[in-house]
Image 1 (tube, rainbow, N blue to C red):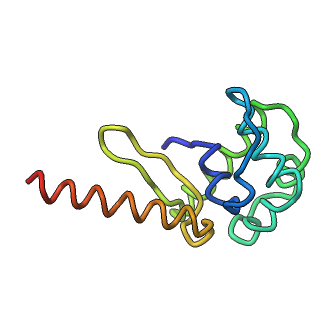
Image 2: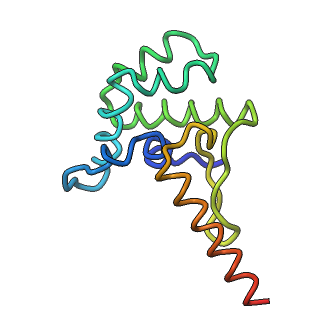
Length: 128
């Protein structure tokens, strides 16, 4: 199982909020955390689906260390995977990663994955 914290947070973020300023490598994740995790929005979206101790949600809201933030998002990913509620995306040659349930995704993310899936199906159809 592979977690991808940037994508995990991104699919839950409204498209209009994804317009981040130009950021250095690794800073986009921290920016996404500021948009969702520290504001309590991530907890409000996920807490009903994930029965986790209050301490976990407190740490999600208050953690400022980049690596510990990433570990917390990986914990949320693992919790969804444990419930068999994660949405698994990817492909055999590039690999797979686990995201929140698709029902929680923002419309832009759902439309994007559906578009990619259709293109891959067409490509496969014409290749074979």
